Image (cartoon, rainbow, N blue to C red; front, side):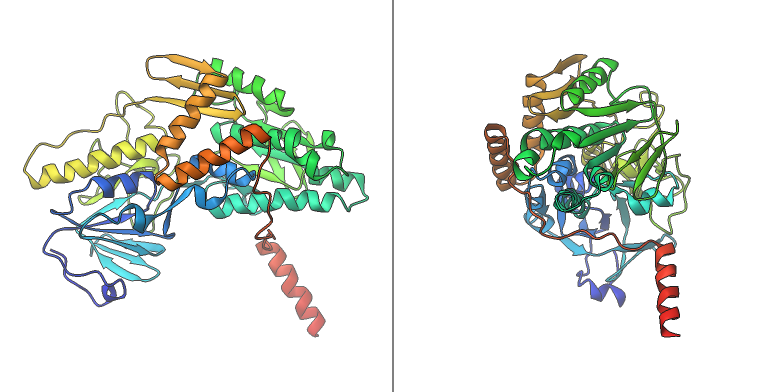
Length: 451
């Protein structure tokens, strides 16, 4: 039983005779865990910095004006409203005190009997501050809205500029990373170029708009077969995307992208989809994998901790069938969330725990209208229209709220028959905050003016 502390009063969590499980993160794994946990046996508290769950696979469509952000987000309170003895609090977790079983957050601290880490992943910039400060990630709803505003603002600027070089830099887009996110963003930009932007900006020659997809490895869609990578490449070429394989971005100053072979691309927009790493939390001392995930056993228990568990992108679980750990994908997080909840009940019932075994049902990625690749369990591989329809069906099925399913399906139908994107709105203009170096320079200028 967890006793109520003074700081916990800020969260207004009632005292309980049942063991308390604190879950950090309302992503795919966190939601699945809370849905499946037996709250007649446990009190559950979910902490997340947002009050909504984001369906991340469709963020790229928000970024490219295909969907509104609220169609891919669902209220956590609404999704889990049926759960008894469950409490949600919107908070930024700052640190975990493992010695006193305390989670510290922006709204206070809370004790736990068991802690489940389901915080997902963050963008991996591989230590390059320029990429972090000047590129556009696509991991959160605000990221997608920033990119959407940037794209539209670029074209609004381009129509009033006289310098051909500046116009070209505004109309160039560089996407780094040839995984599903990079491929999908590049394809969506290609569709905008072919079907939408020429109608909105007749003053511009859209043939000059250049889209570059940069991939450091020797093929696209590294987690899929070579055949699927080749198909994706062919589909992207139909959208006039410049696919550069085996190239690495070495530098970016906000205006020019420099590759490892010396090639320079003038571009004011660099989309970073080159990798992710675990979203680790201060205070939890444990070994980390190369991609900064906590090492966990087959039951998702964090190494060197008896009551802390990590699921999804936060846990690195090496096994015979996955010697390099499981992929950082939503299905892994969801399956681990379900099994961990069941194992908690097995513990209370004095039953043997079940070790995690990932059931890989397949992978898929879409490039655009009627163009997708899919690889299903059993070695089946598809491309084209059937794969695209399968991709749509799976994503609609996984969306958490029925209303969102209807809204998204309606948008997709409209886009399909009209070749239109209905959300080309600059609701929140994007302005990049100054970098630390620029902040120092501004302070020096202000100080000089005062003198």
